[in-house]
Image (cartoon, rainbow, N blue to C red; front, top):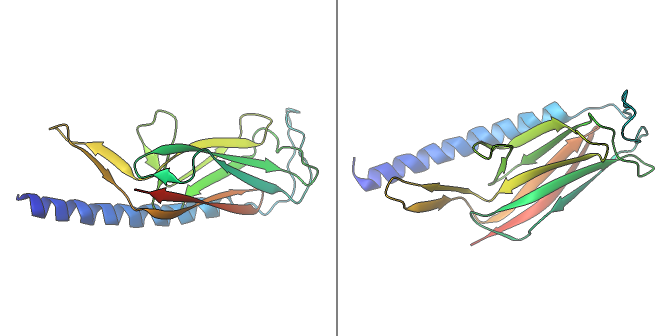
Length: 168
C-alpha cells in the first residue's frame, strides 16, 4: 500500500475513533450524573454530608502544547466547604480532542469515573493533548487538534467545566 493511501486510511480510523470516544464520553457523563443531594460515609472518613455540592477543577498547565500532558484535579465539596467523603463517585471527561490517562499509562480514555479513595473529595487524572506514537523506524508522530478542549467533571448531581487550550 502506498504511503498516501496508508495515511488516508489512518486518518479515517482516527476520525472514527474520535467519534466513538465522543459518544462514550457522553455516556460516561450520564452515568456519573447522580440526582441525590447528600452523601454519607459509613467509614467515617470525609466530613461532607450536606447539599449544594460544588466542584472545583484545577489544571496543572494551561495552555498546553500538543502532545504534552498535564494533571487535572477535581475537588468536590458540600455547601459548608467540607470535602465529599471517601467513596464518592467523580467522573472526569475530555470532551473535544484530548484523552485521559489512568494508572499504568498504556491506555487512553475519554472519560474516567471512579470513587474517591481519600477523604479530600478529590480525583486526579492525567490529561493528554493528542496522541503521540512511534513507528518501527523510530519516527515519532503526534496526532491531535489545537484549540480549546472542554474538561467536564460530574459528581453528586453537579457538572462543572474547564477549558484547556491546546497549542502547537
